[in-house]
Amino acid sequence: MVEISLKPLFTMQADTANGATHIGPVPVGYLRRVVFVTGGRFAGERLSGRILPGGGDFLMMRPDGGMHLDVRLVLETDAGELIYMTYVGRRHGPPEVMERYKNSEAVAYGEDYFRTIVQFETAASRLAWLNGILAIGAGYRTAEGAVYEIFEIE
Figure: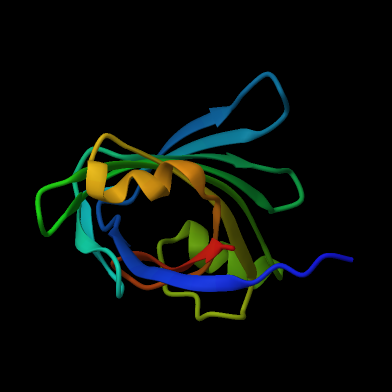
């Protein structure tokens, strides 16, 4: 098999302290929940900046308690460059842990499975390399929102 290596990209704290909007059961058999991102920060060796308010996670909550993540954010680097970041992911774990997540309570890394697949788009020439990569992330939840460790797939 081919070997895949990971290169640290950044750590991201997405603030979601305003909670979630519960849409309810939708025709495909899931519960739809929207968690709005109100801000946050990201920091790494090659990129640092803030998360602009207005993004969100458009979750599908499965009947078995698992979640399908669908997140769209705009990042602004410390130099003022804009990056559109999207990711999908999966989150599942023991029922008591998932209940804490639903109540916007902290869930430590490793208490559940929380993984993402990330893509970027930018018009910033200095960051054009982001347009050609995929990244992955692993996360956990604090009282303020989600924290992710994001890695470029080399």
